[in-house]
Image 1: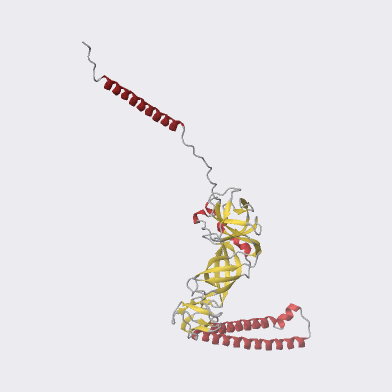
Image 2: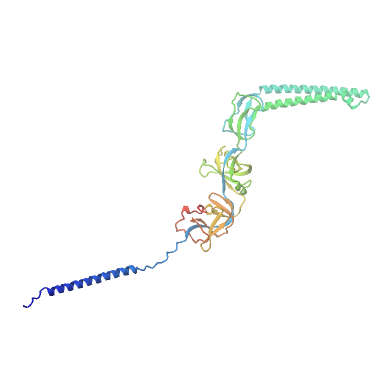
Length: 408
């Protein structure tokens, strides 16, 4: 018998063939994937690196300097005090009868005007007695002169010459000199009594304002008792204080403008620098100056009145001027250093010599030249040769924290 062929053999071979092809395809896909992955890993994308852009130069504020003949604007503060002030006292003893009309605090009295009256009864009696003593002395002198004339006649009739000493005694010359001395004493006593009567009326030594009555009418006064406090109204002084280094700009006769917070807006008074005192102010060790103000109470002119003890601001107009360069104080760094911008827009460190330095501005004596540009703001940490940009009107202003004075 012939063996039977299996019907499934061709199909099995076909299936095995398909499995082999699928495995090969999968293997190829895997290999391809791994190859692509390896290529990606070993060949990263190339990015072209460009250098970063250079930062813009620092923007700064500058001022173009110009030399001119000028002086600093100096100011200080001072207290008003009286140029003339007196405690008017009695020069004779007696009872104060009354004050003259209008002699009250705040009123002005004219020079030599009567301001107070002292009882004159006792003084008038003393004057009358002194006049009697004077008349008696005059009579005694007349009698002695008659006696001397009689003695001279007798001596001449005697016909003998005596020594000078004996002749003086014979002619009663000592008695005559005594009578003349007593007459002089009596005349002085009379004049003193008359002067005391005159002094019973107190008068103002100069045109003044009554500051205060120190006693009342009816008070019993002794010689030297203070009666009135008077203040002269022709002129007041303002005692001002300024730093000692500013004195080089001032001299006697310089004009001074005075202002006060208590005056109307825009009101000023003019004064004149009288002198610079040799002593320093006790507290601040500043130099002291005296400023004279005429008609301080504005009695004869328009303007605010000065009051004793008031504190005024004094602005000086120095008479001394120099060829100087003005700079804002913000442009100065410690050590009197400035930073200027050269023609290539680079910073240059420039030491300067100061003639004056105030809160807002400074005056340069040397170190800068006309036309140079000096930095006033915008620098935090400047370097020699640093490139900068000068701010134009439309640019953003430099920050306040970048002021040159903040860093050295």
